Length: 200
Image 1 (cartoon, one colour):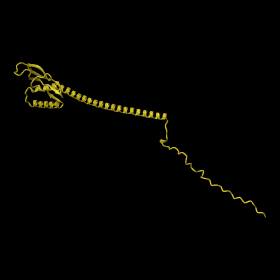
Image 2 (tube, one colour):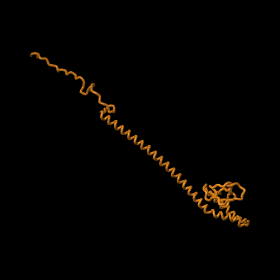
Image 3 (cartoon, rainbow, N blue to C red):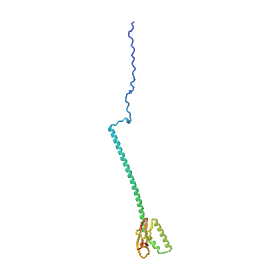
Image 4 (cartoon, rainbow, N blue to C red):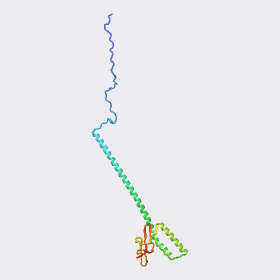
């Protein structure tokens, strides 16, 4: 039997592949980050942003001015209200005083009649009782602010009324020589001048 001159061919070895399909390309560019540093504004967008900032600053200034104006208005109103309360308190107090003056002025003729009654020098118990009533009345009126006008010394036309002249007294000219009717003031205001006799 003849030898087979043909040698069996051995299977060819397949060269190993270099790398795998999943190999990452090291030269690939990195993805941009999601931060603001990666945002690039155009010139138009930048100018619009600047304009919005300027508008907001203007609005802030306007709001500040409105707040300052409102504070000033509130302070002014508060001051006016305080003055209003003071005026009302003053008017109320003055009205009360005016009422007291009117009542006391109406009672002055009664006081005059008491004075005339005491001129009779009556020492009876009845007269003494009337005198005590008179003193109580005077005390009550003084608590309401009544005070007798002084009538000693020189005549003062601001508080006295000269109704008679004295040509016989040795006193100096202008001196009050007699009180004909007592005068009174209530809380600084005269309700009746003192009627006096004055040396000419």
